[in-house]
Amino acid sequence: MRLSVIKEGKALIYIPDTRDAQISKGIIEPSHLDVFYNPVMEFNRDLSVLAVSTFIESYWPGKEVIGIDPLSATGIRGIRYSLEINSMSKVIINDIDKDAYDIMVKNVELNGVKNVDVYNKDANSLMRSIRFEQNQIINIIDLDPFGSILPFIDTAISVSSKGTLLALTATDLAVLGGSKYIAAKRKYRVNLISIKHYREIALRVLLAFIAYVAASYDKVIKPLIAYSVDHYARVYLLIDRGTKKSEEMLNKNIGYYKYENGILMKCDNNCYGPIWNGNISDIEFLKSINDKLKDFSYVETYQRMDKFVKMYLNEMEFSNYYHQRLDTICQSQKINMPSIIKFISALENKGYKAFRSTFSNVGFRSNAPYDVLIETCREFKSS
Image (cartoon, rainbow, N blue to C red; front, top):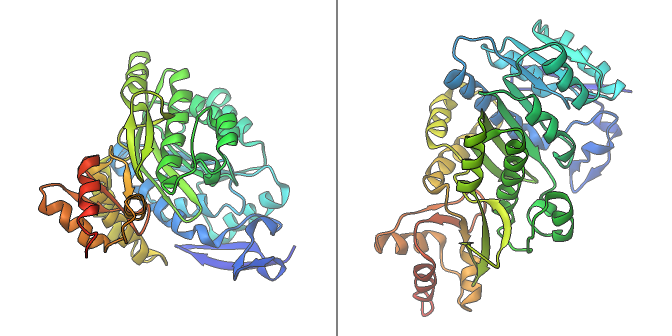
């Protein structure tokens, strides 16, 4: 296998030579490389370094912290954690593929990281072995599979402890978001419809599913940050324990939704779901991320990250409200869509709050009720 070297963050990483890769629409097809590497996910990894660093300072300051990336491929994420987060005591990287293992070993040597352990094992077996056989507490579990998290989530929850950060990436948005609603019912036990608000639905289906798995172990999830961009959804969850707490989590946060006149709404019966209806992010954690952002100005996606974090921080003032799309509301009323800025201004003039959404360039999140959204849209009919 021919190798190339790329630089990402503070790491130099061997990857399979991209001259051997298939190209689609000017983008490398990562699944066709001998060892998986996706340059499109650099933003995901940059934000992960920021979020994990913030988490350690917020929840484990001055303590030994062990993190694991059980599906590492080239090892790029775990090696960056070691290089760019000073408070990481140990990072465990792993891949069941022997070629991936060989590249990880080379990358550990290339970067001179001493606190990174490399394994060539089944991801679930390794997580269980570390937690139950070696009796090590795992503070951070980062799962970034190719596709669904379903084969790994049960193990990840079972090995987590009070105070563990569980970071997950899911790329099966077509299933989670409702486009493939039959598969969604089979895999995630949820009834969905296909709508343009699929990013919101995908996140909330994912959170609800994980919450049910957590509750089966008498554990609780608290979303610190959850978002969807590009081709994936990403969540960072704080784990807690307790039978009563897990029951309260489900009673408080699991619910249903309906879709009427282009508007996504919570619903009590004859609805779609179940989905997570609670907050999808913690505002104080987001403020800490925003404060720490400047420490990572060296990363290639810094400008995008800065814009995203600031917009997301505003949006998450209404984290427990669904995001809405101006195009679907106006389409339902047979009205040409006005400027999103003008629409938000009109809501604010009526005494409501509204913010642009990171979920769509025509999206917003607001505390304005259904009838106000319809009424405001209609006011633009003659303009």
